Image (cartoon, rainbow, N blue to C red; front, side):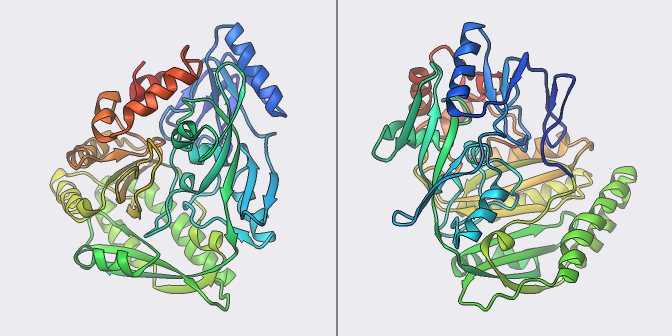
Amino acid sequence: MSSTTSAKNGTWRNWGGNVVARPAREVTPASVDELAEAVRRAAEDGLKVKAVGTGHSFTSIAATDGVLIRPQLLTGIRNIDRDGMTVTVEAGTPLKRLNLALAREGLSLTNMGDIMEQTVSGATSTGTHGTGRESASIAAQIKALELVTADGSVLVCSEKENPEVFAAARIGLGALGIVTAITFAVEPLFLLTAREEPMPLDKVLADFDELWAENEHFEFYWFPHTGSTNTKRNNRSAGPRKPVSQVSSWIEDELLSNGVFQVAQWVGRAVPATVPAIAQVSSKALSARTYTDIPYKVYTSPRRVRFVEMEYAVPREAVTETLRELRTMVERSGLRVSFPVEVRTAPADDITLSTASGRDSAYIAVHMVKGTPYQGYFTAAERIFTAHEGRPHWGKVHTRDAEYFAGVYPRFGEFTALRDRLDPERRFQNDYLRRVLGS
């Protein structure tokens, strides 16, 4: 499966298949100068501009009827600074390539999400994250970035240079300009020991604070219609490296996590009444395992079953109560949910519109397989999340607007004021940004 989005007959679709756009033209710049020129030309022609990565967002954050900029030629590592322990990378570089290149250099990001198909700029601009007690989202690991703004000028920002832009542009939603390069903090390559094991949901909820406090990276998947979860604990290790064997990797990651899971989704979609029974089987299929490997081989996993997702960040202290409400809702609703609910955490950070901005957070993600009607489930889940002042992931399905965000982000006005300054004519506007930021 190619992770790239398709553009047939001038039509662009995202990975989840739920967003379609028809841009007036597409540009694939080979340099920052060419990109800046494309932005200036769009202004002359009165067209809006959007850069799009691999289309892994489920929202229409990258959709445009104007100029669609594809960054696939802006890839690769520009510079590795071993004294400062940073790496500067072109915006269109897929995370997969960055992780591989860093590992060859004996380096690694501190933390990452579980999918690595996205481009570095697409992932950071929407707030992609993994799970961590002390280590935060990918964007929180940014030390500097380069941005082409609405007038075609190139702005470099960091804590020292244009710090007010830096505070916001690390998760800029594509609203402040087009990111062309990112400098990440890196560290010497390390090993993680992963411990995956089933655990009853009641136990996870009762012991959540302890599980969170005792592990550098804790997450779990709950299978709706069951009392079962699969927990994952990743902690740094002195080694030796003991990767998952290829056979069991294929069985666990491909056959069970993708193959059997895909079949289960097909059956569940055709005959919804079978979903609870399938969930019971699915939740017991994954057995406990422990392995030790370099970070990207532990943090990330292939996702071949296409789905649509909603994810909200709630204050960390509200997570168990939110999950109990979610369980009760599923039990009472008559909904048939065949996809596990994923729960992760992040520490507070200082990025203006980060979902973890200023508060320790827990993430609860609900999914439905691509092509199934998800509105009923997502609407009911969203009602629960918003009651806890939840903040939706910018790249995942939600129905919130600027008025709501002004209430849950104390620094919302700071972001919109900066946008007024950097993009007064709304060159980078689209319907999604009009809804979430106001016009």
